[in-house]
Length: 102
Image 1 (cartoon, one colour):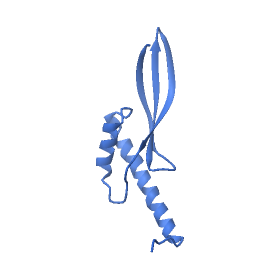
Image 2 (cartoon, one colour):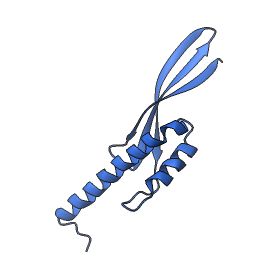
Image 3 (tube, helix red, strand yellow):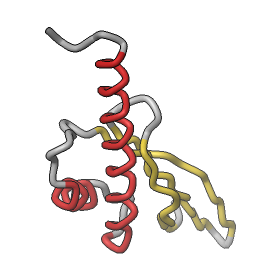
Image 4 (cartoon, one colour):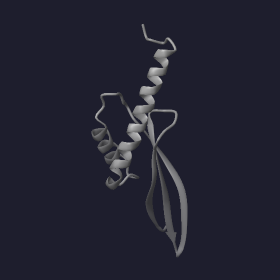
């Protein structure tokens, strides 16, 4: 088996769950032959709310996911902000529909 390299790609909020999607390209070189494979990793989050410290969560995600280099910390934070905005919007819409919780 040849050498494998990971090239980071787009980091984005998952549209349907409490997770971020990490896109990357796996480059394998074997006897001069290079193969590039588009891959994706879903990083699930345990908790995220309006009071969550996004910087701290982003640091933990980068630390735990080998496909995200530390230079992409800002992109992880952006994805977390997008997730939080979506969550707050969904909660607000639920309350407007009369869900109110009580």
